[in-house]
Amino acid sequence: MKNILLSVLILIGAAVQAQVEPTIISLSEYLGYVKRFHPIVKQANLVISESEAKLLKARGAFDPKIEVDYDSKTFKNTDYYDKLNTTFKIPTWYGIELKGSFEENDGVFLNPEASLPEDGLYSVGVSVSVARGLLNNERMAVLRQSKLFVKQAKADRQLLVNEILYEATLSYFNWLRSYNEMRLFEDFLDNTSRRFEGIKKSFEEGELSAIDTLEAKIALNNRALSLEKSRITFTKSSLELSNYLWLNENTPIEIADGVIPDLSTLQSIDEALQISGFLIDSINLNDHPKIQSLDYKLQSLNIEKRLKVNNLLPTVDLQYNFLSQTPDIVSTFNTAAYKGGINIRIPLFLRKERGDLKLAKLKIQDTRFEMESTKVKIKNKFDALDQELTSLSTQNRYIKSIVNDYDTLLKAEERKFFLGESSLFLVNTRESKLIDSKLKSIALETNFLNTKAMLFNVLSLPQDDPVN
Image (cartoon, rainbow, N blue to C red; front, side, top):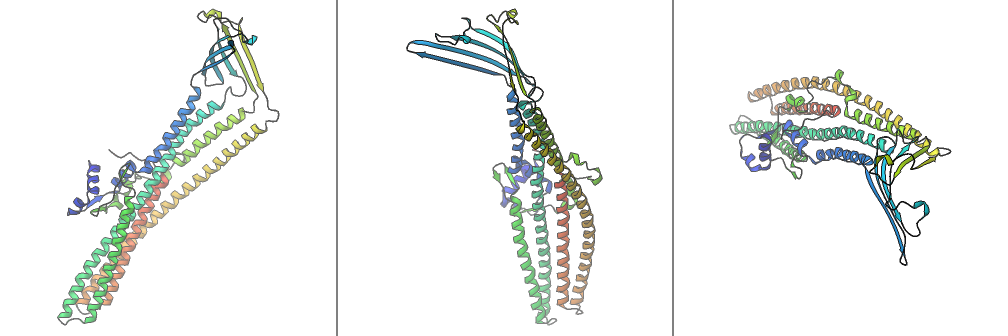
């Protein structure tokens, strides 16, 4: 219900603007829309769909097959031959293939070896690879790899989704920062405007000089200029944020003027990014999706290596088929009537096979190096982010103290000015220092939030699906 209300408020800008209180989009609501509707998130789901399609294709190598081979020749009213061969094959997991067939041949010039009984000949047999291809073959390897690709695709999808959520989160924080800066200049413009009116009135009563009025007017225009710049910045950041907001897969939406970010984001950041209770010491790098993806890749390469080892063996294919004219009588299939054969192929130097095996081993070694390097990088990122968050928390305490002190100095200077014990120059100077310190405070808060977002990105935790 909340999401429906949010959609209405975003799309109907006029209704939003008419409200006294602005509409707030929290980070959790915003990310919920990104996860549910953003095209790149949908595109990430295609990675899994593609790997599942490849798995289905690999399983097709074990599908039973029906083959029909018919060949006929007629010339000058003479039936040279009619040959029909139908076969039903059942591939099995290992290098064994079961098959049954029916042959029927007829014709004047039929090859003697193709002569068959008038009603045709039935056969039931088996084809076996007794060396290369028995315990490991191309079909088995592709199917095993395809199963791993599905798991790897899920890990890769998690990385892709977290990356787009990270970019969207940074955009939200930029939006929040520009809004805070705009509010800051609105407040100071209001203060400067009241001060200008007071100085102008005092000048008219002869208590202050004209130069004070001019200086107050310059300060007022400076504040108005800063506010106008901040409004443009806020508008641009709102449009940037809208890049990640979609009502459905085909309908992008824009942030209306009456919609603002949640000012309490700093207090709810961990819950919004689902990183509450995160501890550096509790991290298991083997559970990280990047490491899992590389591990699945390594397992796939090991399957490929075992296949290359198997290819070093000679090819020895055996066939044996029981023959019968009366397949309805099982006892007629016996060793007295059979058709068999053997096919042997042995490359003399095995250069191709040895080269393939060496390349497979190099790929495995390269992936292992990448995995170890990635683990170190992720661990170092965690340590760096943890220290950075600690430092930013300390810096935020300092800047808040500085802001409070500058605020006290400004108020004291204003009292002294209206008592005739100070100058407008000092008041403006104090105010400029306070503005600078508040801008630094906003920047530090944004840096802290961005660092939290980086931690979220490095963790790449599975994301809960948004509530429909």
